[in-house]
Amino acid sequence: MSAVKKLNFDAVKNDLLSGLTVALALVPEAIAFAFVCNISPMIGLYAAFIVGLVTSVLGGRPGMISGATGAIAVVLASLVIGHGVEYLFAAVVLMGVLQLLAGILRLGKFVRLVPHPVMLGFVNGLAIVIFMAQMGQFKNGAGADATWMHGLDLWVMLGLVALTMIICFFLPKLTKAVPASLAAIIVVTLIAIGLSSAGIYHCRTVMDFVKMLDPNITSLKGGLPMFHFPQVPFSLETLKIILPYSVLAASVGLIESLLTLTLVDELTETRGQGNRECLGQGTANLICGFFGAMGGCAMIGQSMINIKSGGRGRLSGISAAIALITFVMIGSSFIQIIPVAALVGVMFIVVIGTFEWSSLRIMKKIPRADAFIIILVSMITVFADLAIAVLVGVIVSALIFAWKKGSYIEIHSETNQKGSKVYHLRGQLFFGSARNFSELFNPANDPNDVIIDFHYSRVHDHSGIEAINALAERYTRLGKTLHLIDLSPECARLLDTAGDMVDVKVYEDLRDWHIATDRLA
Image (cartoon, rainbow, N blue to C red; front, side, top):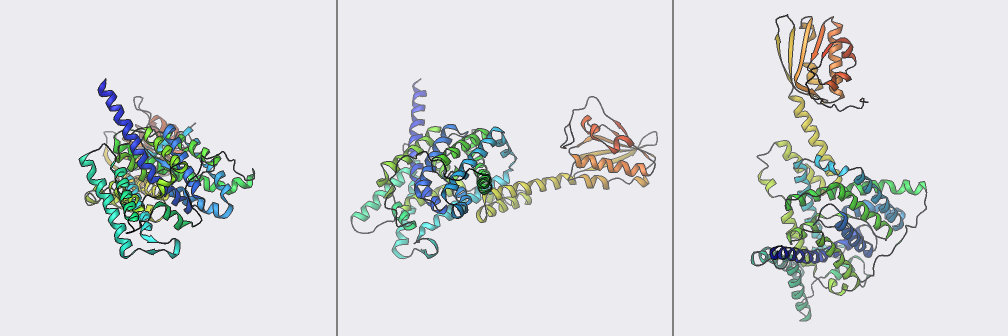
């Protein structure tokens, strides 16, 4: 019993401390994403709090961190510019409804269709995106006027980043009582305070970063989010405006969340619930829209921080959300003095841990098609969009699979004692192999009685059915008889032309193999 209590205590301690670490990293990112979306920083912070709390309680993946994300910010930015922030809130409400529908319809299971090379490309691409996002912290100024650091500023920044990474790397080898990321942030913050107090050097802090983006902001202090019904016309015109943004944001959010869920599953050797995560994300975004927040989804960077800091349970996400809103309400003065270098160092450690370095070693060992998919998805993730990258990766993988399967269809022919020619078909008959199937036969040179044996083959879709129908017509025009034997019962029912022209024999002991077609009752 004491061992169980000790285990539970350790789990609670790890979740609380890792949640605190995550909360510290959430603040600058939520603010940065808010500026990307052209809205107030508080709207981004509220989204990080609401999405993080609700998904931790209701979501399907304990230990995964959700909040305001760059992917959602980029999608909704043009809506804010064109129509204002109230339309953003309405779009987030509809986004939540769409994600709830995805959960109710149990669409989360389709994440299983994402091939492993696409997952590797997704992870590598996100690691590169996280790394590139930190490069902005090595610049002075914001926007087009920003210039790269140089001289003392650059060396101090690099030194503090390196110190943070060293602590994160070596502290776990000494003790795991305190998350290395949290210890690194505290140590670097104390050093920065010491340098500033001594008048030696002022390190750029979170507050400096916020003022660089908007000089009018003097504090990150705020209250709890309040209920706010989106002030937009309740009309069909409004729906036409927000629907495209809501659909895209809901899709991007679910794809990023479900792929992050799969990644966390692999790291923790446990299994999350995809459909429940859809419901959790949908509920969170629905609430965001009614409480003046920008919405969000799972965050791979913060999830990696949490997992590597020892956070495994729902308490880690809950504590991160509560710590975040506590910082906003009463602890903003502490958050504001944290050096940006400390947070950059933590994110660099996340990049190193997120990138699948093994994918570089196996490039020459795996099929060239898989290597191409990994590189393709990584590049599209970096230069375009996560949702587009995954969609393209899945489509290319499916096409390559269809091409390979389509080329593996062959026949072995023989003449039986009655003088009939028997074709023994091997391979799968579907849209990818239908053309090859047709080219295997030469009706003009065959005898008057021909048999095609499907014992080692299966018909999978309507293209396969049509290929059989077309072949039957070719034999019929020549006045020859075609027999199809060992077809599945379902395939035999679906044959149209061939059913009238040929003798179809179905073995009763066969399995009822299902065919992908829309003509079944």
